[in-house]
Image 1: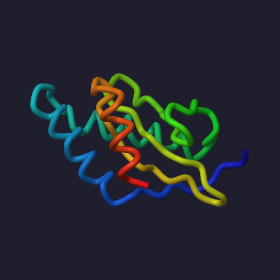
Image 2 (image 1 turned 135 degrees about the vertical axis):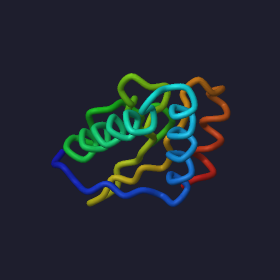
Image 3 (image 1 turned 90 degrees about the vertical axis):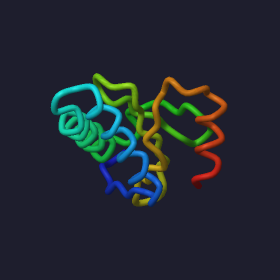
Image 4 (image 1 turned 180 degrees about the vertical axis):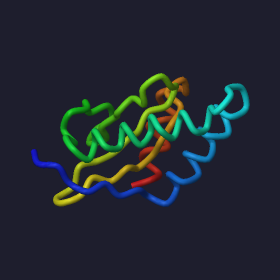
Amino acid sequence: MKSQPVEFLEPVEHDLRYARDFYESWKWRGAEDFMERFRESVAWIEWTPELFPKKHRQYRRAIIRRSYFGIYYVIEPGVTTVVAVLDMRRDPRTIRDTLKGRK
């Protein structure tokens, strides 16, 4: 598959704020480091959206390097949509319920 643009659902902004606050609370430059790794992961998704495995039905997950968070997204014709950025230490049922409520 060719590369294609990445879009973000509105709730992803809240997810990123939560993740930045989490890392900033205990790590020096935590928020900046997290966002740098997040942008790196999004670049991989944009470049090769099918690289990462399906985890829940049509939702794929890219693990953000050196973090507890994963980017959940779907591949659609002409665009890849990021649905959520979630802490992967959560109960899998909670993650599935969050994904169902977003799309």
